[in-house]
Image 1 (cartoon, one colour):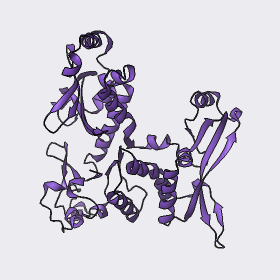
Image 2 (image 1 turned 45 degrees about the vertical axis):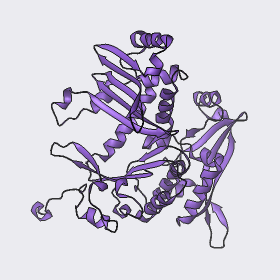
Image 3 (image 1 turned 90 degrees about the horizontal axis):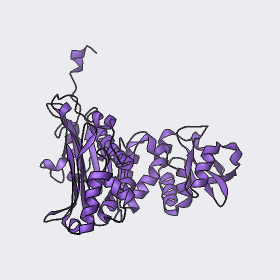
Image 4 (image 1 turned 135 degrees about the vertical axis):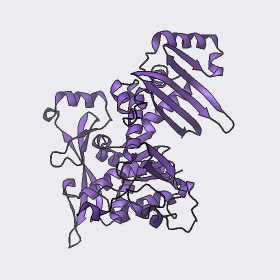
Length: 400
């Protein structure tokens, strides 16, 4: 499934799904859970839920292998954790970990059959693994060669589960990536010139920076990781950051420089902060679109249409839908009904979020309905046929 669009009324729970995926990634990256994260996922509208553990699960595919990872948190500890490989006939256990007073670990049969492996598992269970720590992260970080399945699953969650949020954008060294990746740069030029933004082309300007102008700690971090870009806040406009990297013994500052055409046909460079919110948002999307087209990854965007014209969003989604070579998956929440077109999205790629009678969010696909291939699903959605829309009181009753 290349695309998944999630619709729903305001407050239906769409953004909570995105946040949960980001928090799961954060937990795996940190290697342990915190009581704060645990408490934030308690369902506050049910007294019984307040005393129950919080469960999260993720099913994904990488390098042709299907994984299912689940974790259960209870009062600040990992009460359950498991990883399995999914096959058509049966699932193969990689590991299972339970904590109920005492902690028990179980690995797949092929691993535990070896005596030295069994001894290591016992030491891991009794001495090494804390009750708040994730076994997935602990093994992948400290013993990456011990069980490749664990390491592969961990690396996919860390590197290839990409959740777009303000923090992600603020830490994205856009200028550096556009300058170093010809394919990404080419996509940037094509999209901006083809969407009538007024930009004829984009250059990445660069200059050597005197390190005395920067914070010594910041400079040290750059020198300790040569070739790894970091962002430098744009003092003229905090909507978009520029890049700085230490390479070839120098600190190199990079910035995006859009070109516009004058009436006499000559091009001039304009500061990026002169561009509209929509244009900057589009520039920020380019690396994510490129990843979906070229990499085995999942990109998740909350409210994809924010600051962008509906026709532009429709064109972007259509291009991804029609691509014969796209390798990744794009999941997004939206209110934009123009995307409800069976020429763009299949019924099983369209999902709705709606609260049940207990105010818990339920997700269901359009394919649950008997949809004819010629049906106008946009009209059906706006008329409330599939749910996932706000319920409005009669405004006359509100004395407006």
